[in-house]
Image 1 (spheres, helix red, strand yellow):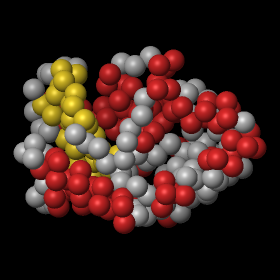
Image 2 (cartoon, rainbow, N blue to C red; image 1 turned 90 degrees about the vertical axis):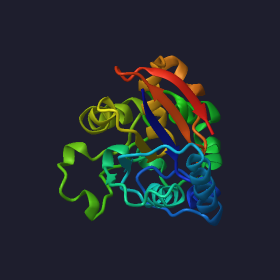
Image 3 (tube, rainbow, N blue to C red; image 1 turned 120 degrees about the horizontal axis):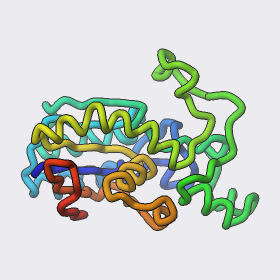
Image 4 (cartoon, rainbow, N blue to C red; image 1 turned 180 degrees about the vertical axis):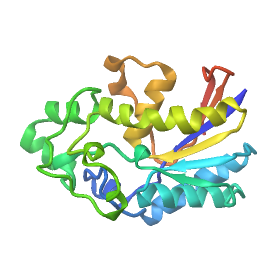
Length: 223
């Protein structure tokens, strides 16, 4: 049996202002930093030893990962950063207030964009990136993503990097984002696309999975 722990980042400035963020970079709020610290304290009580920590290339997740690692006394553990664990790309919705988009597009449409598996938000005209993505081909840089697309770009990292370590019996910690973790949870728990709309991942609440030697879920607890 091996343990996989998932943690969504603490409250970000975009969470605080209720705006869409996606691949845009925002920092943690003071509350978010405290949430990350509390998550680390809760996780420390579990006394799980990790061989690696995985996070996105976005500051809110990286900061949370570092705070958690400090609290559990494992800052020395390798921290791997990948765009494949980035938040879902919200396309042209980025930077917009969620309540305002409901007024413009209607609550039903916004609910589909936010919670359904297949719905694609309005796309950007071109990818608005920065140097962290400059070495990647244009084909992997999204103009917007559905949750289905998020799952598809996340799974190669799971299959090539994380799963092999778990199969060796090495506990792994993933610190990422609401939608990218929803996509991974859907995959791990074999949740049907039509049932994923009710799946929520709260800020900075550690989710601990016990997995068998086939990486099937034996047990799940949320701290």
